[in-house]
Length: 409
Image 1 (cartoon, rainbow, N blue to C red):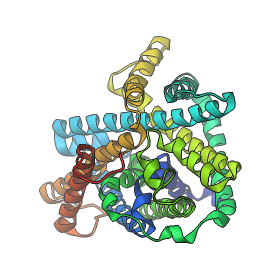
Image 2: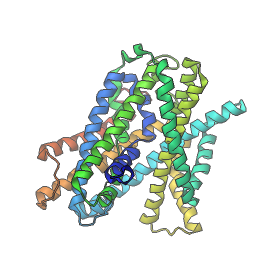
Image 3: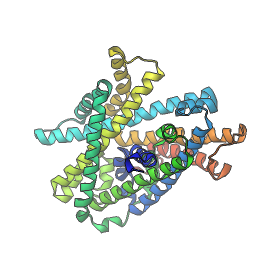
Image 4: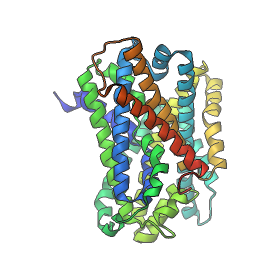
């Protein structure tokens, strides 16, 4: 079979591509100060947790009679109207939180570029507004353009990452891999959880692979393993280039008002090779734009469907306001919004893809006595671990925000 016709390979790449996004930028900013060893431990635990939740969602999806049922429909069928309301609100807040993070991060990068080009300070809020005007309007009024620009950005993302691997490695200092403060690891959990999220495409993969359980399991496993590799390499590069402490250390960057642009500033300071910092900036920008397109399109369709808004000129304008007014206000009034929004997005992921799939499977298995061709191992014990783990994810974010846990913000 020709490789481009291999649906399992294509599905694997879809899972990987959905996971790898702007959350990748937040990983070294939140976990770098813990040191490479503890970061790796956290990545492995979150990888296993989210992979298990993917399998639970797959089992729940195979229980439903509608082949292409989305998460909202699945929850309504298995958990009723209240479960549907929880899923609907959590999904909307997840999309808003991630959109706010991307606006904040993209805006700070644009402001940094304009400041360097015009030799004057440009407010990050100006950058946020420009990012929204350019890329937000493309999503609402130019759907075809999204595909073209997204493909170009994906090539840019892959190319800049490969160049970083080749040219940054000589600048890595191996003594940076020693040390770290594991106290910060708990506050980083929601961010890492978000970075391993690709659950939204499970229903589509079931249709694409004609319900073949073996192919679905293979795609979900390898599609999650690829991001784990990318995250570990990215983490190693950033930790290897930057010290943990100091004015331009990882601790200071993570606590900065605009950590994404602060990362490129720190690299400029330490490496004295401006084009490497520019390369990191390009990689960050491409990661933000490609992720923003996916989130914005999902939010656009979700609001149009949920509120029954027709996509006329007036409807598109109304959708534009509903899509971007909440995240825009958040990005304007919370200067540290990137990491905060990414963290709270992890909370909604824990509800949507940690708690709800387990509850759906529990009801299907033990209440409705459904017999499916696929069942996640571990029985009730593993399901309870997943529920408790999801509650801990939520607690860690709330505790970090309230100051109960050591955090960089």
